[in-house]
Each structure stands twice: as C-alpha cells, then as structure tokens.
Image (cartoon, rainbow, N blue to C red):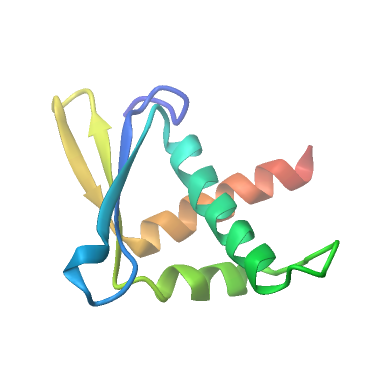
Length: 106
C-alpha cells in the first residue's frame, strides 16, 4: 500500500440518525483526513467552551466523539487494486492515535 502521504482518502460522515446529515470530505492523504477529524473535534470543543482560552482533551474523549457519529468511515485508495478500500471507526481511531503519537514525539 502507498504511504499515508500519497493515498487519496474520502471520509463518509453521518453525524446523527437523520439521513440528511450524510456528507463526505475529500482529502489528498490519510493524514489530512485524520487531521480534519481532529480539527473538527477541536472546533466543537471551542464552540462548547467559548470562554476558555486553553482547552485540553485526551484521546479517549476524541474516541467518544468519533463513536458519537452514526457513521464515520474512510474510503482509502489502494493503488495496487486500483480501488477504494473501506475503513471503519476502529481503523480511523488507530490512524488518529498513530498521527497524534508522531506529533507528540516531535
């Protein structure tokens, strides 16, 4: 499989049971897709706590946010198969954990 830097990724998102909340976002890389999820969560926290200048959270809270979606999945391009492979919430959490761990080591 190609690296996260080069793999086109589509996020399929449904925030709640209402089918009208279905949407998608298109990303050039897996890392960009995961960063979009992280930043969406951070914007949500800022909206919930507008007076807080410094908001902290742990990864379990981010996972709970992800689990709160009716549907959150990724379609990741597999160049060897010339097709998109579906990835579930567990895979997304794993990739986010990896990405945040790498960022923390820097």
